[in-house]
Structure formats: C-alpha cells, structure tokens
Image 1 (cartoon, rainbow, N blue to C red):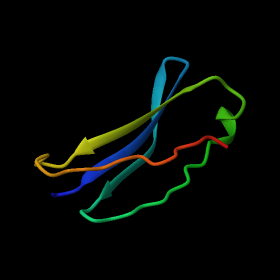
Image 2: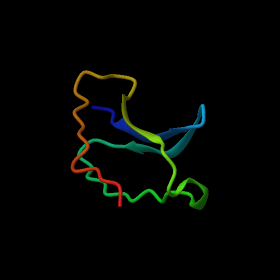
Image 3: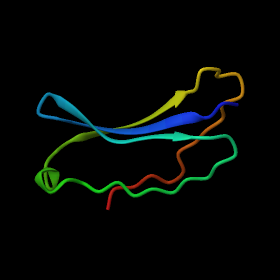
Image 4: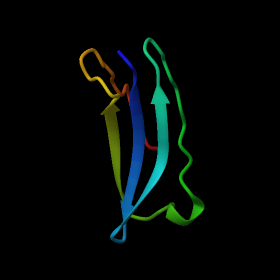
Length: 70
C-alpha cells in the first residue's frame, strides 16, 4: 500500500469547502477532530467523508470509525 488520503468536505449554500485533507501512510492509525468554523455553527450543511486511494489502490484498505458531529 502507498497510503490513502482522508478528506472532510462541507457543502453549504451551493459552495464546498474542504475542512480536512490528510495523507495517511500504511499501518497508520489517525484520530482527528475537525473544528466547525464559527460561521457554520447552527446552519444546515452536508458533510462528506471522502477516502482517496494513493497512486496504487491494490492494497489500500482504510476505514472511518465512529465519525460524529458534536
């Protein structure tokens, strides 16, 4: 495996912003908190959890575990 890229995108009012864009290497365990910008709190938005394979997807196994919005 050559790793994966995890992204969190927020869609609101016809625009999309990327809140997280992180490359993760093989065998890594990552725990991240993504802060909601103050201007977005209380608004209806669509969050997208995205996982992108590296250059070779042959052995790229990745998973989101228990994502939540607090």
